[in-house]
Figure: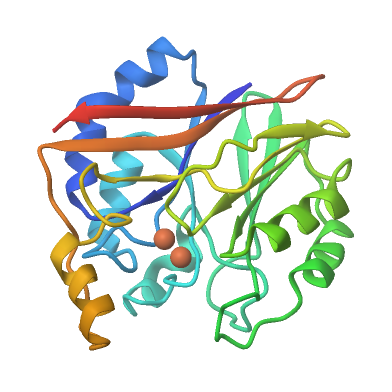
Length: 253
Ligand SMILES: [Fe+2]
Ligand SMILES: [Fe+2]
Protein backbone atom coordinates (compact mmCIF):
# COMPACT_ATOMS: atom_id res chain seq x y z
CA UNK A 1 0.00 0.00 0.00
CA UNK A 2 1.36 3.40 -0.98
CA UNK A 3 0.43 6.41 1.13
CA UNK A 4 1.36 9.96 0.19
CA UNK A 5 1.72 11.90 3.44
CA UNK A 6 1.81 15.66 2.89
CA UNK A 7 3.70 17.93 5.29
CA UNK A 8 2.05 20.94 6.98
CA UNK A 9 -0.32 22.62 4.52
CA UNK A 10 0.16 26.37 5.00
CA UNK A 11 -2.74 28.50 3.80
CA UNK A 12 -6.03 27.77 2.05
CA UNK A 13 -4.53 28.66 -1.35
CA UNK A 14 -3.00 25.16 -1.26
CA UNK A 15 -6.47 23.69 -1.67
CA UNK A 16 -6.48 25.09 -5.24
CA UNK A 17 -2.89 23.97 -5.76
CA UNK A 18 -3.77 20.44 -4.69
CA UNK A 19 -6.97 20.49 -6.74
CA UNK A 20 -4.80 21.09 -9.83
CA UNK A 21 -2.09 18.56 -8.99
CA UNK A 22 -3.09 15.82 -6.58
CA UNK A 23 -4.77 13.48 -9.05
CA UNK A 24 -1.73 13.62 -11.34
CA UNK A 25 0.66 13.05 -8.42
CA UNK A 26 -1.39 10.06 -7.26
CA UNK A 27 -1.40 8.58 -10.77
CA UNK A 28 2.32 9.13 -11.39
CA UNK A 29 3.32 7.64 -8.02
CA UNK A 30 0.72 4.86 -7.80
CA UNK A 31 -0.69 6.31 -4.58
CA UNK A 32 -3.54 4.49 -2.81
CA UNK A 33 -4.20 6.92 0.03
CA UNK A 34 -3.35 10.53 0.84
CA UNK A 35 -2.83 11.77 4.41
CA UNK A 36 -1.88 15.32 5.40
CA UNK A 37 -0.89 17.51 8.28
CA UNK A 38 -3.45 20.32 8.18
CA UNK A 39 -2.71 22.41 11.28
CA UNK A 40 -1.88 25.53 9.21
CA UNK A 41 -4.56 25.52 6.51
CA UNK A 42 -6.93 28.30 7.56
CA UNK A 43 -5.12 31.66 7.42
CA UNK A 44 -1.97 29.86 8.59
CA UNK A 45 -3.26 28.38 11.82
CA UNK A 46 -6.00 25.88 12.51
CA UNK A 47 -8.57 24.26 10.26
CA UNK A 48 -12.12 25.52 9.69
CA UNK A 49 -14.86 23.07 8.87
CA UNK A 50 -15.18 24.53 5.36
CA UNK A 51 -11.52 23.87 4.62
CA UNK A 52 -11.69 20.45 6.26
CA UNK A 53 -14.52 19.48 3.90
CA UNK A 54 -12.59 20.82 0.90
CA UNK A 55 -9.54 18.73 1.82
CA UNK A 56 -11.72 15.65 2.21
CA UNK A 57 -13.30 16.36 -1.20
CA UNK A 58 -9.79 16.30 -2.72
CA UNK A 59 -9.47 12.70 -1.55
CA UNK A 60 -7.39 13.27 1.58
CA UNK A 61 -8.44 10.38 3.82
CA UNK A 62 -6.79 11.30 7.09
CA UNK A 63 -5.60 14.50 8.71
CA UNK A 64 -3.17 15.02 11.57
CA UNK A 65 -2.63 18.29 13.37
CA UNK A 66 -0.16 19.83 15.82
CA UNK A 67 0.28 22.80 18.14
CA UNK A 68 -2.30 24.73 16.07
CA UNK A 69 -5.04 22.09 16.37
CA UNK A 70 -7.40 24.34 18.33
CA UNK A 71 -6.32 27.70 16.87
CA UNK A 72 -9.72 27.88 15.13
CA UNK A 73 -12.00 27.04 18.01
CA UNK A 74 -14.85 25.96 15.69
CA UNK A 75 -12.91 22.71 15.32
CA UNK A 76 -14.33 21.69 18.70
CA UNK A 77 -17.78 21.48 17.08
CA UNK A 78 -16.79 19.01 14.36
CA UNK A 79 -13.53 17.25 15.29
CA UNK A 80 -15.21 14.29 17.03
CA UNK A 81 -16.89 13.16 13.80
CA UNK A 82 -14.06 14.13 11.44
CA UNK A 83 -11.20 12.12 9.92
CA UNK A 84 -8.83 14.11 12.11
CA UNK A 85 -6.41 12.91 14.76
CA UNK A 86 -5.21 15.49 17.27
CA UNK A 87 -2.06 15.20 19.40
CA UNK A 88 -2.61 12.33 21.83
CA UNK A 89 -0.59 14.00 24.58
CA UNK A 90 -2.84 17.06 24.80
CA UNK A 91 -5.12 16.90 27.80
CA UNK A 92 -8.50 17.32 26.14
CA UNK A 93 -11.57 15.24 25.52
CA UNK A 94 -12.14 16.89 22.12
CA UNK A 95 -11.12 14.67 19.22
CA UNK A 96 -9.41 11.31 18.94
CA UNK A 97 -6.14 9.83 20.20
CA UNK A 98 -6.11 7.36 17.32
CA UNK A 99 -7.75 7.59 13.91
CA UNK A 100 -8.46 4.32 12.11
CA UNK A 101 -8.54 4.23 8.32
CA UNK A 102 -9.66 1.17 6.39
CA UNK A 103 -8.22 0.43 2.98
CA UNK A 104 -9.43 -2.73 1.24
CA UNK A 105 -9.23 -5.30 4.05
CA UNK A 106 -6.45 -3.51 5.91
CA UNK A 107 -6.57 -1.18 8.85
CA UNK A 108 -4.23 1.73 9.49
CA UNK A 109 -3.99 3.47 12.86
CA UNK A 110 -2.86 7.09 12.70
CA UNK A 111 -1.47 8.79 15.80
CA UNK A 112 -0.40 12.41 16.25
CA UNK A 113 2.04 13.41 18.98
CA UNK A 114 3.54 16.73 20.07
CA UNK A 115 7.15 17.05 21.09
CA UNK A 116 8.02 18.87 24.31
CA UNK A 117 11.41 20.39 23.49
CA UNK A 118 11.10 24.16 22.76
CA UNK A 119 7.31 24.09 23.21
CA UNK A 120 5.70 26.08 25.99
CA UNK A 121 2.62 23.89 26.20
CA UNK A 122 2.02 21.63 29.20
CA UNK A 123 1.97 18.23 27.57
CA UNK A 124 2.01 14.63 28.70
CA UNK A 125 5.16 12.69 27.88
CA UNK A 126 4.92 11.62 24.22
CA UNK A 127 6.88 8.41 24.94
CA UNK A 128 4.67 7.26 27.81
CA UNK A 129 1.55 8.31 25.92
CA UNK A 130 2.64 6.16 22.96
CA UNK A 131 3.37 3.20 25.28
CA UNK A 132 -0.17 3.51 26.62
CA UNK A 133 -1.79 3.80 23.17
CA UNK A 134 0.09 0.75 21.86
CA UNK A 135 -1.53 -1.42 24.53
CA UNK A 136 -4.88 -0.97 22.79
CA UNK A 137 -4.21 -0.27 19.12
CA UNK A 138 -5.25 -3.10 16.81
CA UNK A 139 -4.19 -2.38 13.23
CA UNK A 140 -2.16 -3.74 10.34
CA UNK A 141 -0.12 -0.54 10.17
CA UNK A 142 0.57 2.19 12.71
CA UNK A 143 1.72 5.61 11.54
CA UNK A 144 2.76 8.42 13.88
CA UNK A 145 3.00 12.08 12.89
CA UNK A 146 5.48 13.40 15.46
CA UNK A 147 4.98 17.16 15.48
CA UNK A 148 8.01 18.72 17.08
CA UNK A 149 10.88 21.17 16.80
CA UNK A 150 13.87 19.17 17.93
CA UNK A 151 15.28 16.53 15.61
CA UNK A 152 16.88 14.85 18.67
CA UNK A 153 13.46 14.30 20.24
CA UNK A 154 12.05 13.00 16.96
CA UNK A 155 14.97 10.67 16.47
CA UNK A 156 14.78 9.40 20.06
CA UNK A 157 11.10 8.65 19.57
CA UNK A 158 11.97 6.81 16.35
CA UNK A 159 14.60 4.55 17.90
CA UNK A 160 12.40 3.91 20.93
CA UNK A 161 9.40 2.85 18.82
CA UNK A 162 11.26 1.25 15.88
CA UNK A 163 9.91 -2.24 15.38
CA UNK A 164 6.68 -1.35 17.15
CA UNK A 165 5.11 0.98 14.54
CA UNK A 166 5.24 1.15 10.73
CA UNK A 167 6.28 4.78 10.30
CA UNK A 168 7.18 7.90 12.26
CA UNK A 169 7.02 11.03 10.15
CA UNK A 170 8.00 14.43 11.48
CA UNK A 171 6.14 17.69 10.96
CA UNK A 172 6.12 21.27 12.32
CA UNK A 173 9.42 22.71 11.08
CA UNK A 174 8.06 23.09 7.51
CA UNK A 175 11.47 22.21 6.10
CA UNK A 176 11.99 18.81 4.54
CA UNK A 177 14.95 16.88 5.89
CA UNK A 178 17.07 14.38 3.97
CA UNK A 179 17.42 11.89 6.82
CA UNK A 180 14.81 9.33 5.85
CA UNK A 181 15.64 5.79 6.90
CA UNK A 182 14.14 2.44 7.78
CA UNK A 183 15.21 0.64 10.96
CA UNK A 184 13.60 -2.52 12.29
CA UNK A 185 11.12 -2.07 9.41
CA UNK A 186 9.97 1.30 10.78
CA UNK A 187 10.13 4.25 8.37
CA UNK A 188 11.35 7.61 9.61
CA UNK A 189 11.98 11.18 8.51
CA UNK A 190 12.60 14.13 10.86
CA UNK A 191 10.39 16.42 8.82
CA UNK A 192 8.22 15.95 5.76
CA UNK A 193 8.37 19.62 4.79
CA UNK A 194 5.37 21.74 3.87
CA UNK A 195 2.86 22.59 1.20
CA UNK A 196 2.93 26.35 0.69
CA UNK A 197 4.27 29.36 -1.17
CA UNK A 198 7.65 28.54 -2.72
CA UNK A 199 9.16 31.95 -1.97
CA UNK A 200 8.18 32.36 1.67
CA UNK A 201 9.52 31.89 5.17
CA UNK A 202 8.07 28.54 6.20
CA UNK A 203 4.91 29.53 4.28
CA UNK A 204 4.55 32.95 5.89
CA UNK A 205 4.94 36.52 4.62
CA UNK A 206 8.64 37.21 4.04
CA UNK A 207 8.68 40.88 5.07
CA UNK A 208 6.64 40.28 8.22
CA UNK A 209 9.03 37.59 9.41
CA UNK A 210 12.06 39.79 8.68
CA UNK A 211 10.39 42.64 10.61
CA UNK A 212 9.70 40.32 13.51
CA UNK A 213 13.38 39.41 13.76
CA UNK A 214 14.61 42.98 13.20
CA UNK A 215 12.29 44.70 15.67
CA UNK A 216 11.38 42.02 18.17
CA UNK A 217 7.75 43.12 17.76
CA UNK A 218 5.32 40.28 17.56
CA UNK A 219 2.51 40.68 15.03
CA UNK A 220 0.34 37.87 13.78
CA UNK A 221 1.90 36.66 10.55
CA UNK A 222 0.11 36.52 7.22
CA UNK A 223 0.43 33.55 4.90
CA UNK A 224 2.61 34.30 1.86
CA UNK A 225 1.19 33.84 -1.61
CA UNK A 226 3.31 33.18 -4.67
CA UNK A 227 3.04 32.09 -8.31
CA UNK A 228 4.78 28.85 -7.37
CA UNK A 229 4.07 26.42 -4.56
CA UNK A 230 5.95 23.51 -3.07
CA UNK A 231 4.24 20.24 -2.41
CA UNK A 232 6.33 18.33 0.15
CA UNK A 233 5.74 15.03 1.80
CA UNK A 234 6.76 11.41 1.83
CA UNK A 235 5.55 8.28 0.15
CA UNK A 236 5.19 5.41 2.60
CA UNK A 237 5.28 2.12 0.76
CA UNK A 238 3.99 -0.26 3.42
CA UNK A 239 3.95 -4.02 3.10
CA UNK A 240 6.29 -6.78 4.13
CA UNK A 241 9.30 -4.46 3.77
CA UNK A 242 8.36 -0.87 4.54
CA UNK A 243 9.91 1.91 2.48
CA UNK A 244 9.94 5.70 2.69
CA UNK A 245 10.56 7.98 -0.28
CA UNK A 246 10.88 11.76 -0.02
CA UNK A 247 8.45 13.68 -2.19
CA UNK A 248 8.99 17.30 -3.28
CA UNK A 249 7.53 19.18 -6.24
CA UNK A 250 7.51 22.82 -7.27
CA UNK A 251 4.33 23.63 -9.15
CA UNK A 252 2.73 26.65 -10.74
CA UNK A 253 -0.58 27.55 -9.10
FE1 LIG B 1 3.02 23.77 11.03
FE1 LIG C 1 3.28 23.25 14.28
